[in-house]
Length: 405
Picture: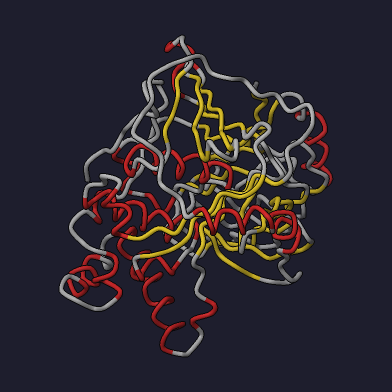
């Protein structure tokens, strides 16, 4: 597997996207059962990435064969209407991490940043403008110049964090993506597959198996007072995609309606990136477990998206990972308020847990029980005293806690 690293414009932003193993396989051919599908089925036995692709393919074919084509998701929804600033944070992904792409565990914000980066770097979708100072790692992505739709980007020193800021952009940008369009924009064959595989893996858009799908970037209504930094003159990357103006105009007119109409019924269960969730409120879900039982490093996201709705992950279910024989580390997301009873119990290989939750209110009994004797739970110093009391109340005083900055 080759390591794919590109940059936005001449700024230092670089995010690795792992899709190279699809370079010699066309998504459409795989869906149609043409040459190569048998080889992929064989590969799926040993490769988790191939296994996940085959799982998605089976789901797609089942929906088509049972006359439920309307249930096939065909739109990548990237939503900035609720959070104008979205970030990807973490080390540059090396080849070892790429081999475990199903374990990436990116939250919805990080996925949006990574996917837009990929569309620019590999598929030349949008033009970018750098600030005059290249060292700053800042600039602007031009989504639709006529509609004043822009995304400003900033990369922290060292490449640890990339932030997108939609600023005062409003309305909805929509484009219909096809293989022919991607090729017209100058994408190499493997990069065409990258765009489609990204839609399937990151957004569960199974319609990409038909080699066509939509991308919708929702900005909502601009917020008064939003900071908008205009970059200085700089060099521009390849020209932006020639969007379907008619579709874009219709989407813009209906933007307010579309931003508020999407709802998911309470009690709905779904999976995303190998993790399973249950909807508990209009904008909240509970992490219930793992779809991919081979995961070792479990990262419970801050937020997750499903059917165009972004949810905060506010709880870990009772017995969510109880008895898991593979997991070695767990990271609890920032929005988690409750960790259920026996949530991480009897995970014999669990040696490291990090609680990033900022408003944790309850830890259930035996949440950390009968784990590895080497288990250490890391807690930020600002929450250490309060969370230590929660551990004590849950009769988990024997668990080793470590205060971190």
